[in-house]
Image (tube, rainbow, N blue to C red; front, side, top):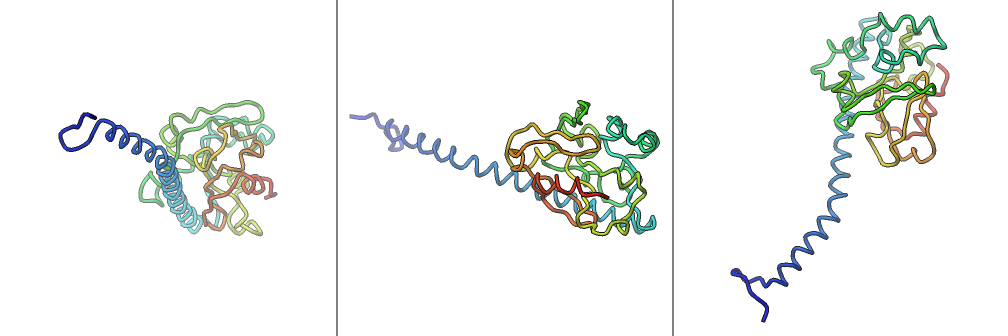
Length: 227
């Protein structure tokens, strides 16, 4: 006769229950992790939207211009602008973008993507910027700027279709979606990679101040549209 524990379960029944719980946990865990990832991505989009409002208010104060400022990639790997020496020479004297926008937001957390797990920024010449353990923790921002806009002293009225201008975006597409973790950023902030990276997504603020979660191919296309 099977041994019965106080409370009515036999040892076999208890083992069966434990096995069922283990199977259910194995099935539910990926779903829960995916839901958590999606929630973090939505929060990231919300922060980016509020940053977009800061861009808009700044533009109202400065004759429609985007901020004249730099991001971590510019400040710590200025070599990415070696082909543009006049621009490169300005970088040491330009303020941080998130500091310029700070008076227009309620909290520094606006510049924090909750999905930010850090990154290494690489360009075609092999320069690496250590954004660990998180971009926000290391530099005060999770996002990168299309700094060419600042160098050109451009504004939202400068471009024919600002809705197709990527202005401010996640430091890494590795924070959203799925796929391999070998993404890098090329010289002048151009992304490089292969077709497997199309599973990744980039939360992006566009030139008309709306935000979108873009695929790798969409980001690639925007980077290559002439300004």
